[in-house]
Length: 512
RNA sequence: UCCUCCGUAGCUCAGCUGGUUAGAGCAUCUGACUGUUAAUCAGAGGGUCCUUGGUUCAAGUCCAAGCGGGGGAGCCA
Picture 1 (cartoon, rainbow, N blue to C red):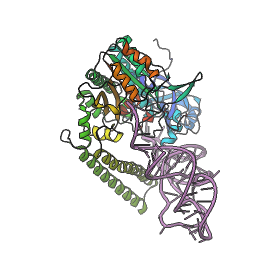
Picture 2 (picture 1 turned 90 degrees about the vertical axis):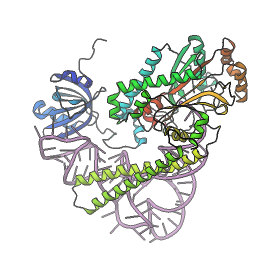
Picture 3 (picture 1 turned 120 degrees about the horizontal axis):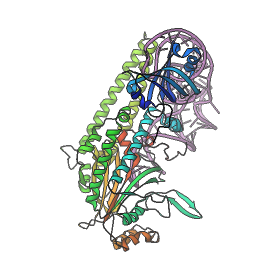
Picture 4 (picture 1 turned 60 degrees about the horizontal axis):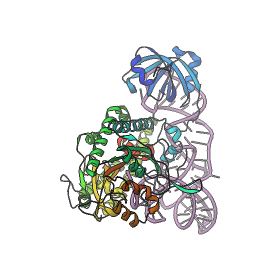
């Protein structure tokens, strides 16, 4: 488009070195010294330090700048100077300043906050550096996903959000009133995706999904976004090939286009780079069970021993933290310290104490995980901890395929070689991020499908339209579902899925 | 639904085996400082210790119930 804005953006400063610019934005931080005020301005495209000098702007504007509250909105004019010490490498020497609004008592302070407080102020929290970076990665992930599918002959087709029945029959759904009859918020667009694949060959849906489970974990949401491709004439092997190429393409795109954001987030990109370079291991469910139970090693690594070593390492780390806390406390108690030094040590102690809390939580969880891994029985679904145990042994995403039929949904195709199994696949991300993709070849035989619907006790009437897809030109086909937020979580390295979506909805949280 | 941890200033937290008037940092306000990076320094204001009940001469601290929250299990992406 032709340029509309009569002002410049922080992201453009590098093109204006030595020149005058006009910036419009918000005061994300302010410090002052005699005759100088340092404003860290943010405008959505980035952050830049702007220096207000009393001699350049005069007493009146200087006083105004000195009093600006955090998140005040301002317009600044000034000269761009290169300065290696600054974020982005540039700063602005302000010659004129106009305050749009002087904001008072911004609730989010320049210090640590608890999760609950931050979620309560999510509408403001989104302005902070980390959240800003996460949202930019999210945007690029969405863009890269569309790019990949659009470039490879897939049509984007949306599934309905109101549905008359549950897809898998197992999960709790949100019930609403649809002109007098009960309707459920969609928990998956997959069945509709299959109908569209029979019309267009290769399609994908990209929409919100809803689960009413009262989950209280760092990787569950009540409302999240799912991408569900569906391909006619694909079997499970082709499905897995697609999943792998797709994930590699999106990861590569993010590594290329979100360098700055990943750096801001302090993300170690080793595993992301691995995901682009290394072939994803494909592990049969039976092998996964043996690996989890510690009966089969992977590249010389044993699951139980690895977990026990992790436990030992955590204990050592905790002891180290406690030692440092004691040392710093003793130093403070000894006295003779300047106030600033006391504060510095006190802050260190606070950080360490929080670390110890986190470690304690892991120390109570891991023994339970060990117990669950040792006693894992063939035929069960992998729990969150089992996923961690398994992925801990690999350096890139792992695909577990051929699952026991009982633990998977009715629409998955039974393996003709052994009917105990269905041709499903779960993709587990490394670094403890767990299941990011669930996919399968679909049952294309109408008789088997009817049998499964009956066995699960699902209402046959609701599935008649779906069975039509098998009555009229049934073909082998496959697809998968990808959780956008879990994907974003893994890319950004964040510990909580609630940070991966602008306004998270989860058990107990409907506002803001 | 189950297990587990937590609830003290606007925010993050300390407060020991119950014992004077409830503590710190940040934030806010006043002042100092011409290069700060969560700036620093001096000072000021700021409290229903989640609620209810109990034990006690005495409860932020102990006990019980409730409410709210974190993490995990189940369920899944």
